[in-house]
Structure formats: structure tokens, C-alpha cells
Length: 494
Image (cartoon, rainbow, N blue to C red; front, side):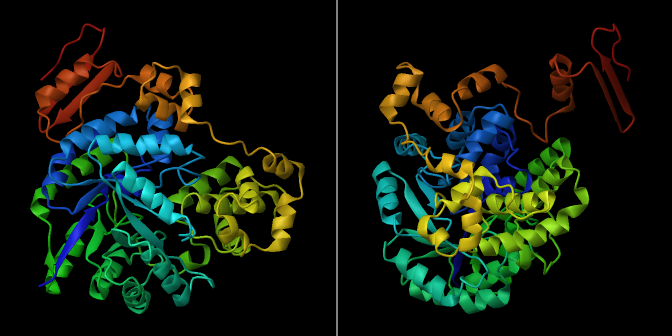
């Protein structure tokens, strides 16, 4: 009986896909003991770049609290970083020395694995990145990114697999970021790439955007994948990964040994459901199949952003036009894989084309950077429509951007800018998020207690009574009624 192991994505990609990265440290920590005890091969824990910015800019939290407290709580399961060391894929052009310092600090906390890759499956510089990770004490799993287009043929994926396998990585991961894989395509393609990689073990990371994620995971295992990425409901399904309960149950029915203790996970799922209902976050549920996904390939979570852009422009009813235009822009851009940040570049430009009414009359700075080769180099430019590229670059703003590509600051220059007394952790935040990052999280100083689903009512009442965010509180349940009004002189009324 072949054993299949699981990589948990609940607090990383699960909440990024369904909760727009709005999970806070106090939301995560109560679930960590259950996730840690369930027998996962590893847990994806945090992503670089955009996640750090989300913590500071939107949640007003210090991401080092998440890193320090979460890593300390994981006593049995290896934690994973996610993302490259530096560069444009790390939400901006992070200086190489800062990226290495960030990884070193993660390793100091016991985070010894990462999953990384290249948005174009361009592995020409991956050997250097592997060496840097390993020198810092972190072991990478390398993604092979799946997509659907005229350029993404069997021969393409086999060639890319041989290219990355030649680097002899710890593991490879077949990553279906757009939820585009079908069971038929999995049966056809996966055995070929697995064979091309030789003895290197494979993981499977698939999204459920089109309702096929659980089936694809099963087909991946049948093809020879040994490690499957899953999430714990309610942070599974929808745009996230398949439910660990569903995949484990089906694998056992097929005769596999699914190495996970689902019962240990139940309290974690109950906790996250409590958080979702309290905070108004999405509860993951299976999506229906939609053939239109293959035309535009816009990731599900990004559609809400497009809808918001259209609302701001007073064009709420034009989403379908934008999705159709997205397919055209993607083709003209040379069929980039629709993964962050490339999918945002394509979708935003498509929305502008529709709103303005003339294609490429107005373009974003990111579109210009793309046409300059700053987000994919020759891989991007070789397939781009030359007329479209000329139209994008034939404007003063393009010439400005082309002339303003400064060298990234060194670590010594950053220490001089921020002061010698600044900690490495604060320097990293300021270099990646912005010079005011430490001030932002310092002003917020959010020390609220961890939010759990099993707090006694007396504790809840005590917290509400001393909190400063409410002046009037009313609780009614099962014949019990309580009302509190601060500063009014009223008491409680059973």
C-alpha cells in the first residue's frame, strides 16, 4: 500500500485565495496546535513580499509576530516559506542582500523549507537561486507552472522538466495555479513530466477554481505524485486547494495509505469557521465547472478586483467585456502564465482598454515594464506581439521608465539610511514595505487576545467590558439577555 503525504496550505494559500490574506496572527495561533499534530509532511506558513506588505499596510500588524509566534507553536511539523529570495516576484525589486537577510532570519526561527520557481518556467538562473537558498540553510521545492495556451504543449512541459531536473532539486511541484488542469489532461501530461524528472519526488499543488481540484489531485497520485497540497475547510475548495478530508477519504477508497489524522484537524476547522462567520470572510465551497475560464484564465480571486475597478469607473456592467479582452491581451503579451503579478498586469490593462474604448491608448506603468522585458526578459518578449509592444513603448512615459532603473541599495547603504541601531527585522520591513513600516505597526500596537471559538461566555463579557471599540453591547441567547452601555450608568439585565 503506497503512502501519500500531505502539505497543508490552510494558513498560506488557503487564506490568500479565500480571505484575501486577511488572516491575522490572533486568528492563526489557536489553530496551530491542531494543524501541527495532524501528521502533515509540512505546512506552508507565509509568503514573502506581498504578504509582508499586507500585514503592515492593511492589517496594521507586525509580520514578525506571525513569524515568531507561529514558528514557536509548530513543534512537530516543518514550516515552509513561499517565494523567491528577491526580485520582482517578491512584490517589488527587493535588494538581493535584503532578500538573503530575510531568509536567514526565517531559518533562525526554524523555517527550513520553501517552495519557489519562476513565473515563466525560466530555470536558466534557478541554479544560482538554489545555491543561495542552500547556503542560507533553506531547502527549496521548485515549481513547474501549468498553463493552457498554444505555447504550453507537452513538448514544452517535458523540456522545462528536464531543464529543472538537471539542477537536482530536493523535490519538484506541479503547480496548477489557475485551476485549469482537467483529469483527462492530468492523465495525459503528468506521467510524461514525472518520467522526464527521473527519481526526483513530485508534489501536486492545484486550485479548485473550476471544481476539478479534488479529481486532479487523485489523478496526480495515480500518475506517481507522492505529496498532495490540501487545505482544511472552510479554507478549502472555491479558489483554494482541495479539502484534506475529501482527498484523504478518496485515496483510501482507492487503496492508498493517506498519512493524515483528520480527527485531530476538526477543531482547527471549527475555529476557522468561527472566524469566518465573525469577520465576514468567505467559507470555501466547491465551484461549478465553467468553460469560460479557459478563455480568460483570470484567477477567481482576481475577478473581484476587476469588478471593483469597474465600479470605480462607473462600468459595473462590463465585466464580461473585460474578461473577453483579458484573453486578447494575454495572447498579445505572449501567453504569460496567469499568476501574480503577471495576471494583474494583463487584467488591469484589459480593464483600461474596455473603459477607455481604445486599445492601449492608455497603459499602466506595469504594462510598460512588461514591454521593456522587466518581468520575464526574453521569455516574455519573444512571444509578444511586436505591433502591440511598439504601441505601448511609443510614449514619453515609457522612455522615462526605461531610463529610471537604478541599482538596488546595498545592505550597508540601507543601514546608513535607517541608522545603525535599527534591528535586522525592522530594516527588512522598511526595505520591503516602505520607510514608514515600523512606525505604522508601532502606532497600531494591536495586542488583542487570540480569537478562539471556545472561550467561556464570562471571558467574552469581560473582554467586551474593558474593550474600547464598543459603547453599547447586547447579547441574547437561549433565554439569556445582557446589555451593557458604557458611561450610561446602566448595568446588566438577566
